[in-house]
Image 1 (tube, helix red, strand yellow):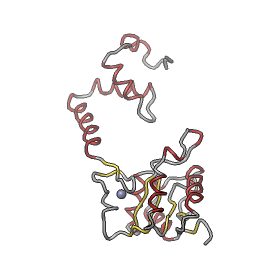
Image 2: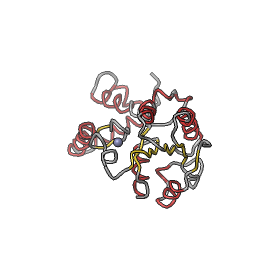
Image 3: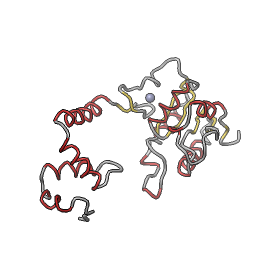
Image 4: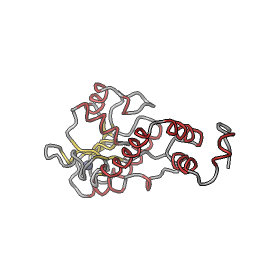
Length: 214
Ligand SMILES: [Zn+2]
């Protein structure tokens, strides 16, 4: 095992199946948390009150118990179907495809969109091993095949990978008789939807453009 040297002296005594080791093992499996960060969190919790540690554990358990993935759109909420898919006032014929549940939250804040969503749970990233099979794409194609969808708005982030994902989806859907549009470029290239202002997002929805002619 590579030792990053951060807590070298202390770690030698905690190797093995200790509670410390079990916690750092678990934490270091989380995305973006390496071994060193996992050790920092563990040391932080060691000094924290019993109450604080319990609140963290309870929050994780409640999150897993209460949150559900919408069977229709893949959004993460406390019900399945999610409140958006379940809302009779929304137009199920218009589907806005986004990368993450947080993008739905950002777009909903604008209040201008009255269709439904489809959450991919990521974007195509061949270098990271994320292919079409890793994303919620089959279900999107199934929704379009189902025949109720008139327009698919590709709302992946305006990054290299987001654009690549939109292009891939357009190629998959172009022969299926739906209108394909892309959110307008008010959002600066390379940025994330979740960081854009309400005004910019409203404009991006309203001035979306056709992806494929016809
Ligand atoms: Zn839904």
